[in-house]
Length: 118
Length: 110
Image (tube, chains in turn yellow, orange):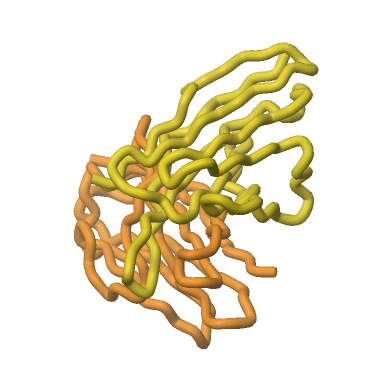
């Protein structure tokens, strides 16, 4: 159980275009989903926190108008990279945290999406 | 702002030898600490969290608030332990996003 999928697994796009990445929790409802990015040989950096039905909370330095996040349901969050540029090329990883009555919430990670902007 | 430091990019030990992956953190409050593991070509998965105080796959980690450390240890390394290990911190018990260290690539030599 607790599987998170991402689609697509990799995408190549031209500079100036927009790309949408989907994150789905397959067998649980996710109260919260998180988006991270990982540059080559570097660690994961939190971009934003997304709660179902409300606006995402972005980390300092992350442009909310460039990285649009929509959490339309308890099983789906999308990240849209608008007007992509080569410096946006990265590995984007989502995680989902299930609804639970426990005092803590585990995050389950997706496999990641490799974005290459030409 | 919180920070997680993993001083070793790469750690190579022989099978059967003890392993210790270091992790230090800085945070003004009482964070929750985690170790995540990523095996080759697989996604990130939780190895253990400090509040659980459990041993997973022979690994343990003790939170030392005085030294602000959360080192990961295993007494006898196995080849299948070879992977990338990330130490992570959450200010809010997992309900918040995680701050990751840069990771340590552990290689277990036969």
